[in-house]
Image: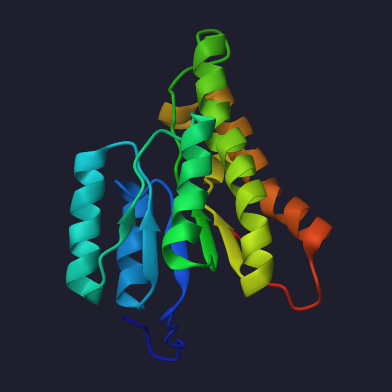
Length: 194
């Protein structure tokens, strides 16, 4: 699991909430955290794929993850994800904001509805999840990890050329954690962006 010279990290006993866990980076993060012994709460829109991720995690750790399926564009789902995680486990140590979407388009053909949907999931949901999780993370000296994209650092090229909502949303995702960290940080409080 670890390269020579790398430290092996343990998340044994840590409660980790991973959004976007039904596929991609979110599913991969859930599997890694399961290997590292985390107690998992998983969120995703596709309930069938979310169950597949959960089953794979359970095979790795022999712990059954809590599943809180639903679309993060819905504020009630966002609240439910955090509330059910804390009610079930009694704490929250790590929030991984991996849920997100990409719509292809240029400034000329991206509709306001497309733009709003991307911003609502890639920015607003991250903000609200972080807002709800911070009081619990302060208690456990926990961490927030926002999954972003190279599109948040520079303008995309090739097939992604122009995706105005994607690049703007990922740029804002990158800035959410440092902003929250600045407001609540105590010396030695970890922050993670990526």
